[in-house]
Every structure is written in C-alpha cells, then in structure tokens.
Length: 177
Image: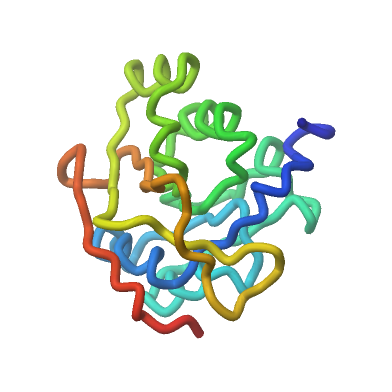
C-alpha cells in the first residue's frame, strides 16, 4: 500500500479535480493568502484557479521530490488540495500537526473512521459539500471528467468556513482551461 514515506501505488489516487469543483472554495479564501497545494503540479486546476483568483500559490508534488510528509514551504497561510485517498489518515494527522487552516477534497465517507474520527473530535472539522457528486479526470484523460462517481466528495476544512457545514451548488458547465 505505502512505498517509502508518502508514496502510494493505488490507481485510485490518480483522480484529478475539474475546475468546476475548485471554484466553490474561492469565496472562502482571501486573495491575500498564500496557498500551498502539496499534491499538485503547475497545471493543476487548484494552482491555476487560485492564481487566477489573485492568490500566491506554492505547489509541490512527490514526483518532483517534495514529499508532503517531509517537505513544508517556509511561508504559507492555507493548505488546499485533492490528496491521495489511500493516505488520508496520515495526511489528516499531518495537517493537524502543521497547524495551518486547510481545505482537502476527500470522499465524504472519510468522515467516519476510527482514527480520523478521533482527530476530528479532538481538533474539529468543517465540511463544504455539494448538491451533486464531483466527476474526476482519470486514467490520464483530461478531455472530460468522468461523471457518475459512486462516492460523494466534500471539502474537509479546518479553520476556514464561517460555519461547520455548507452545501454549495456545483456548476458542472464551468469550462476547464
């Protein structure tokens, strides 16, 4: 399951977020905040949309030698990404250790789990969820997100939202770059 520190060999971890699923977070992020996207490359929709929003964005990826479990930028305000799902327990734990506000897109079912549940109770968690399921780019095909996902996704947030549960309307017609 886990190779080395933060790497995973699970194919399910290679799901990329479409633009329409990134846009709803913008209203909760001030343009003066420096955002770290720790599981992203420069062409990530998170990186592109946040830059268009006026944010300074630091992106890093394990394939570029920057393992989330070992690397941390010097100056940033918020952590935002779609992390590898197979490493969610370790990721959530590290996020709380880092102590910075975060927004992570993960399966809604991850709300219920023994280890994560204890962390959520101890530190708190906020959810930004949607009126429909997010489709993801998979198998290297970036022409159109694969819709009909069998599991719901939500943004798991900490110290970001004005209240603990918010439901947003997804506009799946929003164009990708």
